[in-house]
Amino acid sequence: MDSPTGGAPTDPPTPSSRRSPKRRWGVVAALALPIVLAGCQLPNFGGYTGATKQGNDAFKLWQGFFIAGIVVGVIVIGLILWAVFRYRRRSDDMPKQTQYHTVIEILYTTIPILTVFGLFAFTVVTENEVDATPPGKVRVEVTAFQWGWQFYYPATGKIVEGVTTQAPQMVVPVGQTVNIALKSADVVHGFYVPAFNFSRYAQPGYTNYFNFDVTRAGVYRGQCTQLCGLYHSLMLFSVKAVPPAQFQAWVHNVSSGNASINQLKARIRAQGQGA
Image (tube, rainbow, N blue to C red):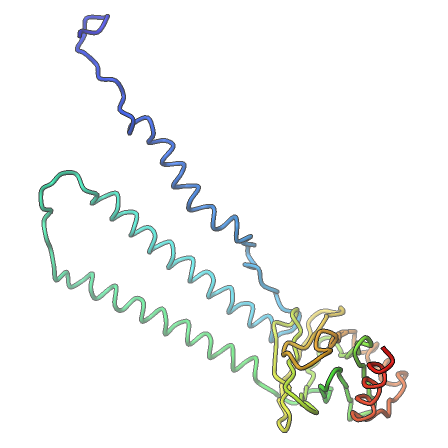
């Protein structure tokens, strides 16, 4: 049938042509949905920036890994989509077969290897910086036990301790290196401060050494991360970072504790019997 204007007959639009804009928006939504649902935060990517020098080094490594993952993911998804749309089936004819593309084979072999070696090198450098323990101006001996913490300052003989609902607070100076000696009096515990991007085991019979260089004042929550018994969920503590002058005033004014770990455990047993 001729068109009303006398021109060549026109075919009605096919269903596929009518649906093509919707399909494109569907592809865009499918690619954006995982990012939206993941709650991706830029530029932190959901991580803490680190309130210590060591934690900030770990945060930078996290950023680098995340960005590398995004780059690799975009390249892989782009190549997949390009192959899907560029070489999709158009007829029943056998497409041209090719093999032994030396340049491409070398590229897709060497680039992933170099990427892995690069990420490994950055990881080693960061781990060495985080685990380095140069002498500091302040030393704190941390003892974990069921179910509490004890912070001992050997230079002054000061002890801060807390059990179950009495979460102790470790006070440290801002901008100074703090040496930590971590051990356990009974079972394996976990010393974890989220804002420091740091976690370390407290193991019986072994002392772990590490440093903190807190960069900004504040109070940072901490907790035990190893299931260590009945009151594991109550093994909380905090780290308070203050200016050096305020720290010295605290050291000279805080009362000295004399409770031993055994006395603290006896107090916990008494609290349990009273409950």
